[in-house]
Image (cartoon, rainbow, N blue to C red; front, side, top):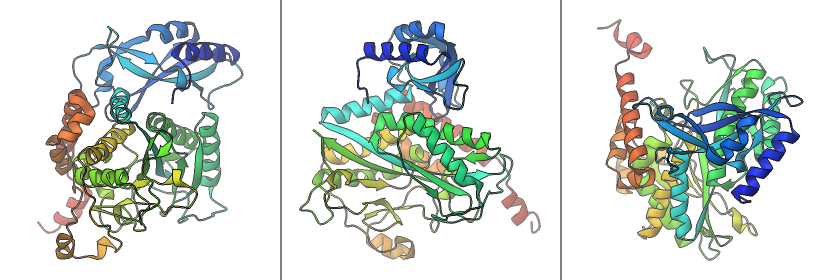
Length: 447
């Protein structure tokens, strides 16, 4: 969150760049699909960039669905200035800043995902809310990018002494902290060679920037150790995929708006309506929270990924879990939305989750009864009887639901909404024309 005025921020950046002998500054921004884009300027250009921004070709923001080239301006956010720890520090250091994308006349570009999130946070702020998130990002280490040979055969929270990944995780955590990103936990995950590093809860805009930085740091440190880190949601058949469970809450005047001591779940009416909004609109935001063809290989029953529209306190088969409340820790009351994966665009994901939750609050949605039993073990009739729906089962199904969604269109704005849907249809068409090894193995011998 911005703590100083833009003028003070600019002075701080210029002073820090001089003190650390920074020669290059990388200007970072994100395309519609959540890919980090960057171009570098020299320190001589820094003052001008902070004042007026730097021009670049804006078609790079569009993902696969390129439009005609158009000039845009990248205006660096001084609050995001950080030295890159993996670049030389003594001489000609390198720093980065996230940028807001503007049209040449100075108006915000509505196709910039960072702008989209800011608009949604503004909508929450008008109701008196600040949106806090804490994502848990799982990922795999493999020997290289051409296969899925892991580095270990450890399991959940295993201490694997001969495991190179212990050093990898440690170096990653230290690098994240050097870049001003607080880390809460790091541990081995359920699947072999799968790991998790959780960042400390913070406001959604800072966290979206942090997620982009986190993904790059994890890959950069892996590269420096001669291995490959991947955020592909489901790289290996038959074992758990990697997700991004997102803990979230709304604060109002410094108080947690989700907490109510008198409720059996310690959840306020605001929290319950927020949960109801996520459950009702969950299917239509899924193409944003799980935006790749491969995302739906993870969202299948039996691999710790939620597919059913239910909520509960302890249950890990539900889409929404309420972590146990600890007395004296009212501020930590939150809900955990478990379907997203980290191969997403965090700016858009935080936007659509917030929008779905706010819709529930504004319209006073009633939350259904919690489901503490294992939903996977219920038969279809039982789920139907209890009104438990499911998330879409494929990218095209998800996109078709999104396309009809007023909530998502309002959250993303027309420009990003239309471009996103177009991108996802291109991806689906590319995928469905492929002939896979599965088909060759199954059908070639018998047909």
